[in-house]
Each structure stands twice: as structure tokens, then as C-alpha cells.
Image (cartoon, rainbow, N blue to C red):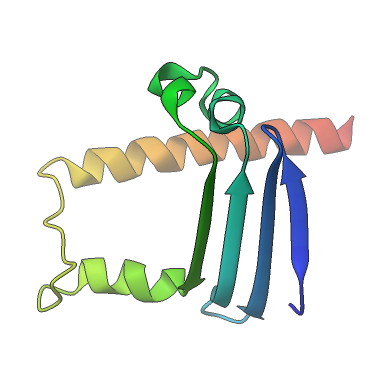
Length: 113
């Protein structure tokens, strides 16, 4: 991706560039930048309510990112970013899978008309 940008609520501009992999191991490695002049409005859109974000001032976020590396590090017990999974991780995965199944069934129903 040479350059991808979007304007989100809250006068928020998001820009990314980098390599997008769509093979067996999809992922992204590149650069991301977000600038928001009204974070409360962005937060309200994102979560459905502004909450304490109404107190935030204008911000800029910029970083080189590779989300798959972060995800892999959290699963590797030798990594400092490792997080012990919750005891009920199977229940959580089951709940998430069931929700995805419901969404997919709704999509199939919509597509079939």
C-alpha cells in the first residue's frame, strides 16, 4: 500500500502505508498515522459514547507497526510482552466463534435476499 487515508468522525485523519500480506499468514507491516482534532467525537463514534474522552485535547499518533509481531510476542512465553491467557480462555474463544457464526449466517441471509 503506497498510501491509504481516511477521514473519520471527530475530524480524525488516518493514514497508512506499507506491505499488506494476504497469503496463508495475512498481516501488515508499515507505518500508521492518526490525527484527531476532536477525540471525544471519535470516541463516541468508536464506542457509542464519549465517556472521559471528552476531556482529551487534540492528538497525533504515529508509529511503525507490525501487528502480527505483537500478537506473536504475546503468545510466546519467552517474550517480555507475553500475557498469561485467562483461565476461561476456551469459553471466551467459544463465545467469540459463536458470535462470528451468527454474523456469517446473517450475512448469508442478506446475500440470498
